[in-house]
Length: 255
Image (cartoon, rainbow, N blue to C red; front, side, top):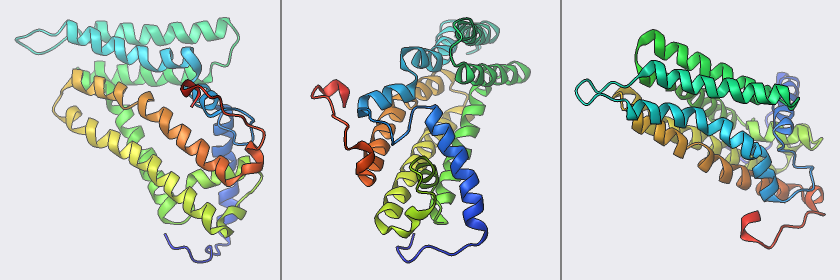
């Protein structure tokens, strides 16, 4: 990316405003609003959804992997796909029902249920357990590609989202420092999705279900959380007034 003056694209600002509003709105709903007066630890925890969000994200995949691994026949190398899928989808249904009963925001749980159900249906249709993870692979590829392209063409998606959240619009493109930071943040997120794809795709193609599911979990929240923290700190550094009243806790657990 060049540090020259931002490109003048008549169609860009209008499209960027729409995209920035969509991305910024999604970030705000996830608790990632740089205008908030909150510690980094609080923001990361909120972005993961707290204990409930972590369980909703991890347990269905964990149960699928455990059940499949435990029931694998040493001769056929096949596990009980129906049982693994049934328990995984069942957990997603329970999580969604609990949110609906408690009248708490259920959009994330419903989205997770739809994704889990679609992946399970595909695996049952093909009879191949590894296909339970194919939607995740497609998602990583799509997100990574979109982020990379946006950075390379000079309209990094992180910048569009932050610009909308901070009422900065696309004015940040006239600031060389902001452009550079948003470029590298977007590249970093693209690299995260690319790394997941690079590690998981060979396992998917070779039908290594247990390893695939395990690495999916390892490269999920454990990598997502520090990326959120880095992004939050970098953005707050660009907009210090928004975080001027924020006091970080002295305990390492809050970092």
